Amino acid sequence: MKHIDSRIPQVKMALMLFLLLTSTFVQAKASKKDKDPGKSEWIYFGADGKLVYKKSAKGDRIMDFSHAGYMGGGVALPDVIVKVTVKPPGDVNADCTALIQAAIDKVSALPLDKNGFRGAVLLAPGTYPCAKTIKITADGVVLRGSGKSENGSIIAMNGEKHTAVILSNGLNQRAGNRLGNAAGNEKTVKITDKYIPAGSLSFNVANAAGFKVGDNVEIRKPVTDKWVSFMHMDDLVRDGKAQTWIKTGSLLITERHISAINGNKITLDVPLVDSYDVNYTNDETTMVLANDVKRLKQAGLENLRIVSPPQAVNHTKALYYAVRLNGEDCWMKDLDLMETMESVGTGGRRITLQRIAVIRKALHDGASKPAEFAPNAGQILVDRCSVEGDNIWYVALGAGQTGPIVFLNCNFVGNGRIEGHQRWSTGMLLDNCKAPNGGMDFKNRGSMGSGHGWGTAWSVAWNCEAGSYVNQIPPGTYNWVIGSKGKSMPLPRPFNNAGPALPEGIFDAQNTRVNPSSLYLAQLEERLGKQALKAIGY
Image (tube, rainbow, N blue to C red):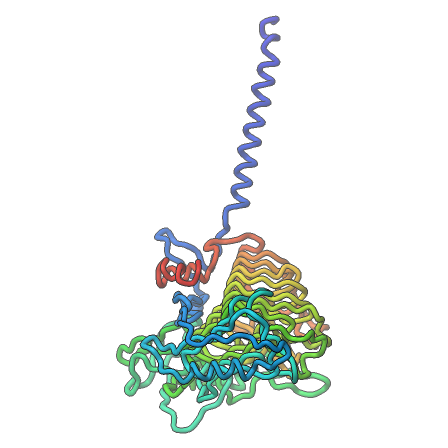
């Protein structure tokens, strides 16, 4: 017994060591599990390393967003040769608008080179007071500063309220992603599929004769009484007056190129965002030839700061705006926009906005809020951009916009929110975006505004962080919040606060990051390879 008693401390020590090692192993496993990404049931890597997409019973899926950006995604922004350099005048109070405009006009008169560029105007370091709008109206022209810091190139807005820089040729831009109406003398063909799932690349038409690969086309979805009723948008009332969400007879228009024709089967260059159901379209969905669009192309704004006087006013008043761009295969990058309001507005398609910072210190006045980014364009990539401010929309889409509209690695500081603002904008991706004290909303705005109703469908928040999400599901569609941190905020339809909260959209792997880390970058790499990531700085 004495011999056995002498071993008890050793046994106890061994047992304690075993328990300690076991505890450490369990903790290590738990820690590894916490750090390992989760898995989305809607998109994940298969055994072969390829992305696998879950589909609805009708075949709807999350779209391939990788076509967003300059030249359709995965193409480096060009470095255009400087042809004219502008220096700030000695008089610090001189209006520099005409000085800068004359340099732009000089470059605009040069011939296009083989790559579609005329040249860049470089602003030397310094401050350039401007009381009027600077305009780029010719293809292949770039306005470039010498940096966006205090020691760089600064456009200091003054005088009457205006937009600092406009990039647009003002020519025929009828085609695009929008709400619209039919025009006369158009080549139109009926789409014969009974149902086209969201995310589809192809469909059948009654007769493909007269169309060819490369044609620019519009896919037109008619707004019918039956569809408006199905969406529960036929009973909007505000202040006792009926509100119209979308006027029946209007068209939801998506612009694409034809990439292949096989008999009467049409394949597009970019997937469709929305679904098309004959039960709600009166079997009147059409494809229309739209080769007559003449947007501004290969134009850019780079590497400078725009500063306006502080604007503690309501956004319905005249304002100092920063930039308006309407074009195709255009870009803006490395801009600091200080105190401008409703700062960045875009139209057209295949546009990249990269490293643009909007900084607002003056507090906006009023309940109705300004939108600092209004990406009302198709195939637009907003990359590593930011907004700092309160009582604003960080991002708000207009009516009838169709994606892909992508916000990638963007940061939003303050109590603002992001939303598809009104009237059926589809296909927005928020990818690794952060708004820790704000919100990201895919929702029904009901009778707000003038009857904004359902603002967003077929949209995704992927591995994001937000204070809250209003994620609602329009009838017959989906919205997804996947791998994202933040709480759900169920709400009833506005002006119907006594009613129940609207049905929630999909919350998948909530508060757990998922693979792929970035949906946009994974889709881009799968479509074009690793060189496409390198081309855009990843």
